[in-house]
Length: 235
Image (cartoon, rainbow, N blue to C red):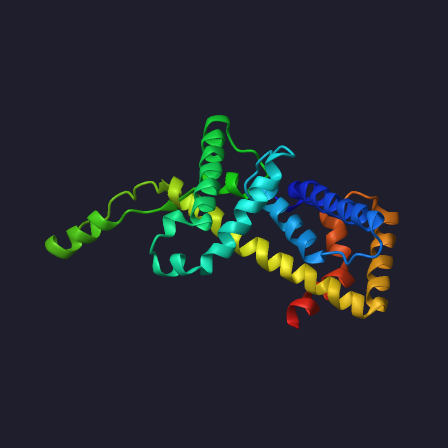
């Protein structure tokens, strides 16, 4: 699953870096809002990898703004108290996002798994469970019974509402926390350029050995990158 998702993640990252470089080229004297680019990347991951959507360039800003409105609306007075919450931008944004998720679920149900998105995995995931309630009731009221052939485990799938709730939770938890971690990592490396140079050198050597395409093998060998991320999360 990780290997299949890497091309999408790499494309999303490259698009944000290209946008950052374009802005720097246009105005060398203006500070670059790194947090905005990091947030843009994590939101791209949300619609590409978590939901498996195929948004057009015109739809991407709408999706990003909806997520931001929904996230920031979580702490509003209306959201906390429930008073008039249905009239807030955050509530309307959540309804819009849930509608996109439900449409994607119906598409998956009609066409089968997409093999890459988290949403697809949740839609088609099944758990085995044994329904022993009738046997337990019989033991309680009639005493022990002779052993019988065990019934085949039943299959249990998540309901549509459960899939939607889980997808929304992943968007909420994943986009903000990942964007904050990346922003802090870039800030720390800006304060200590030696760390940045060492990280760049590691990635250049890996690119020479394995090519420009990101792979699980490259990630496994990115020991210094892993150390930088772990130290960022520690502090």
